[in-house]
Structures are given as C-alpha cells and as structure tokens.
Length: 233
Ligand code: DC
Image (cartoon, rainbow, N blue to C red; front, side, top):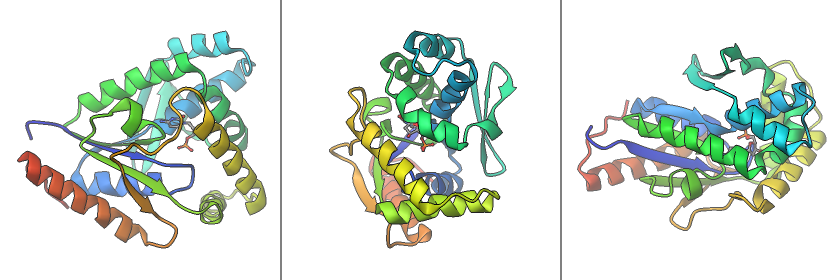
C-alpha cells in the first residue's frame, strides 16, 4: 500500500466506538488506536500526584510523559515512562475526572502531536476518540460519527463493568455519561462535534456486525476511488 489509509471514528462514551473500531482494524489488518486511553492515563497521573485542579502541574505531567500504546490480545495497553498503567485507567475516579483534564488545551496539543505521529507511521490506522476527524486528522480518508441513545450507552457500560466483576448501578453510569457528554461537547478546545463530512451511524438499534459492515463498505469504496488495494479478512 503506497498511501496510508486513515479511518477516524468519533462519538460519545458508550456509543460503541471501541468495539467497532477494533473489529474494523482487525478485518483490515490496520493498527487500532484508542486515544481516550491517553487522556485517561494523564488523568490517572494527575490524581496520583494530587494535581487535579492544578493546570500547570497537569501540563507538566503530560509534557514529561513518554507514552507507549499497544493493542495486545484485545486490550489497549498503555504505559507512561515505562510504567504499565493499563489496569489503572478505567476506574470510576478516572471516569469522573477525565473530561476536566481533557479540557486543557496544552494537554490536548501534546497528545494530538503524539496521535498524529503514531497515525502517520502506519500503513493503515483506525483511530477513535472525540476529535479525530475534526482536529487530529481533518483529512482522514474515512470519517465516522457513532451515536446511540443515552440509555443504550449506559446499559452497555454497565455490562462491560459487570463483565469485569464491577457492579455499578446503571443510573450512576448514566449520570457520569451525561456529565462527560456535557463537558466533552461544550469545551472550548476541540469539542466533540461531528465533522461536516462524517458519516453518522446510530448504533442504538443495529448489530455490531452491521455497524462494522457499514464502515467496511465505505472503506472499500474509498480505497477503490483512491486506487488502493485493501484486503478484508
Ligand atoms: O473514549 P473514552 O471514554 O475512554 O475517553 C475518555 C475521555 O477522554 C472522554 O470523556 C473525553 C476524553 N477524550 C478526548 O477529549 N479526546 C479524545 N480524542 C479521546 C478522549
């Protein structure tokens, strides 16, 4: 493949981004990047260093973070300065604070630079987040915006937690999601918005297979137009 294909997937928490993006990447043999894991890891460091609310300290932590991201056995593994944080970034405490950390412009600048660097070094990438199609890769070849009703999203997250042995009431998850939606969509820097040229896929009532196929069909068409040969596994 001469040109690298970039597939950007954005959407709110619980819209099915991770599952969809992982499957699409697997089908295409592309690299999968979960950018939320990076914001989560910086948030975890901010909590551990008692830096919440201290913007300068959080920026310093981000600037001094050498982030390593790998997708192994179905899990996004993240380490910072060689310390593995994979099991520390999906806690309620991180959930509660990650949107505030993500509002900081300088933190975003640092992480976006890293995301562009990773994406440009691949032969094909599926990157998911909130601002991939609008800011990180505004020229992405394929832009997808996933949505789903708040009830569906909360139920999905509750199920994910339950599968990991954590029981959290759906109502509590729903409140956290609403709160994050509100902050993520209304922040001044790179808010969660649909890129003008993104395709909206509402995942409330379609199966994962259907979601994935919609995207793969689009990839196929785009690749054909660009004269790129993609194989779908
Ligand atoms: O996708 P996620 O729920 O793991 O993301 C966690 C938070 O990180 C989310 O509430 C907002 C922030 N985020 C962001 O601001 N920009 C991204 N590209 C990805 C995530």
